[in-house]
Image (cartoon, rainbow, N blue to C red; front, top):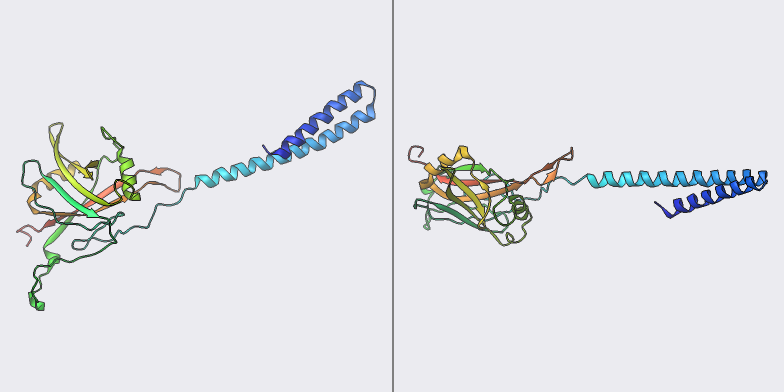
Length: 254
């Protein structure tokens, strides 16, 4: 409530009491005059309080209009060995896992978005000698599942995804994306971790395909974090993640 509204209200009450005193003392004309002045101050107080209420309503509506999602990203279609991610990382090669519990890892420091091409020779080559690298690899995009679940220890997965998108610690210097095999209720499963912190799982529908093609695995070439904003209806969109895995083409597709 504004100070002006309080002052007008106090004056209205004061003149109302004076009017009652005038009537009780036989001063009818004085009592009527006090009532008129009381009415004027009461009207001013009401108009002032109405203006304050309208201002507060406009302020609340303004704060509820949150900005659209951050579009400043390095995302782009994934050519050979390129990154498609809000966090823009340069991929590095990782050894093909061969143990019973494979641990697929890809370390990617934060650098400006760069597209690189495969080099198959260090010697000068003629046009006929240059291999067509676009026919040597294929890519699998995986939309990470379980991103709204809580981890047993540490920050929630939503908190981790928010930190990755904002490039805040411990994700401000590099990203190490890994897939870890484990058993969930007697079934094969793969967790998706960034810097040894779980952000979700490989969807059940893609687990078997990934497991059957581990020998063709080359690298995790990108991670894309999306969501984390309110839509036009005011509903909050949870953070989500998608990773891109690079495989060598099988002999049947060569």
